[in-house]
Image (cartoon, rainbow, N blue to C red; front, top):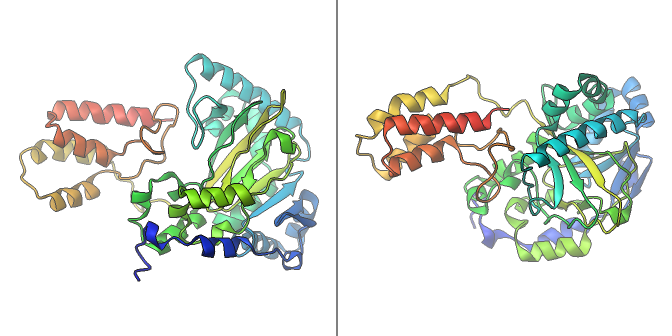
Length: 380
């Protein structure tokens, strides 16, 4: 059987269940203070002390926890002084009020408007309160955790998620990169690339409020990141049902950090409280390797070739090859406030824009206008 390019027929719930039935051996992770429901619990003081004496061993243990281990860990008191959390929350509230007045934004994996969401909170906080930004992101332990998974030269992004009283749970999912793609797109990537995807991003959440169980802290399925076919599986009703039966939740205190492999099946939980707003600053930290060697201005390339392309008779395969070499074929990075997903979970790409313009026989002037508008929407 083909094991490089897979489809839904390759999915095995039994294999998935076997992986998820593993039991954590706390002795394999000596820096952890404890384990709860197969989730490792670390403490800020222990990790900083370990970093001062044997930094490499610390990085190795945290990496192993996210790969060969359960795929998730908690760091208690990631921010021991929660005053910076409170100051950040004030900035978040100002942004949420401002954006709500302008129509607000959508949310991935949840009904638009059911949660509060701030896209690109990293930049927005820096622009509104530089002191808060500096104090928040100068946390050396946060930097150590990022480096443990994606190495040096990483790039940080942040999105605030609020789940309000009565807010409904997200659907279980995997995360960026391939977790944002439709199954027909995922299936075009050979399985080794699907596995590689999880090593390109670290997913984290800093608790900006206490998160008791009734507030719906993140539902997690330890070990699920080890299922290689999982980027095709998370929409399958059988896997969704399994997740709902076996996912666990842990309460967090304000200032705690939760970090997990982006391939871990997870979802925000139901907030069944009457008055508790659960707020998290979601961190997605990207590997330095997700970049090209040269900076290419694809807008100029497409502007240059489009008039000539209108008069060319290319086969479908020739056109696809040309478009792949000419424009960007990936939806990210973008500005999700102004360039929201239209179908599925991803916004339109340059390549899609070019193909649509050709199909509609747009004039060169009209295509250039559409392309400029597309670029402007993607700017932060």
